[in-house]
Image (cartoon, rainbow, N blue to C red; front, side, top):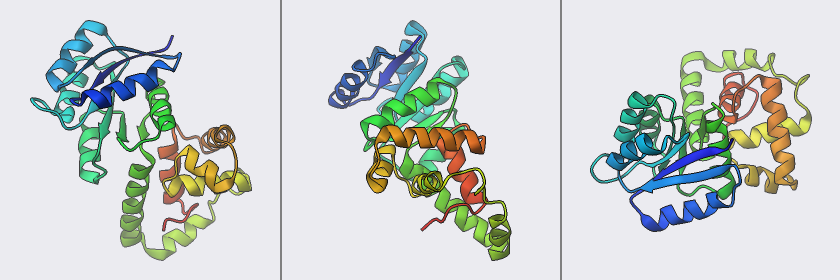
Length: 226
């Protein structure tokens, strides 16, 4: 069974564009759409979707408040925030209220599709740029708290015996904030091959999603963050 989706955004043209993309996916069904947070609650109550794509800036009730209300009333519904803001404050607030995904509206088509699939299957998903920003902040705090000695010790835990050289390259590019397409272009390989590498990386690192894998890699000093 595919994902039933409710789309909430106060810009009709944006909604139409997203719906057109999702209509091409056999595993997705957009069951309804609305233009503000109040509508979101009514539509979820009526249509019982699996995933809600929620704009963060809307009249009446914004996307974050609507997400909080949705999660409280319908705990099984999964929310992905759609936003133009990549600030850590926006992301953290959205995640604290119960969102399981956060995408920037500059996203590529494959990012949207992948995010819905990951969240629908119980995972979490952050736009690659958001992941990169959070990783930079984590590294800054880690350096301040632990210093160079901790990072040097972490090098001994580098999983060279687990990851192939190509998988290490892919992991580094994920930490740099690259999407699947960006990784493919950087390594001159197909997006399908990239997805296979990412799947292998997650399995070997025992990570639920690419965000967790990148954070784990940074924490242990397996990748460099510029």
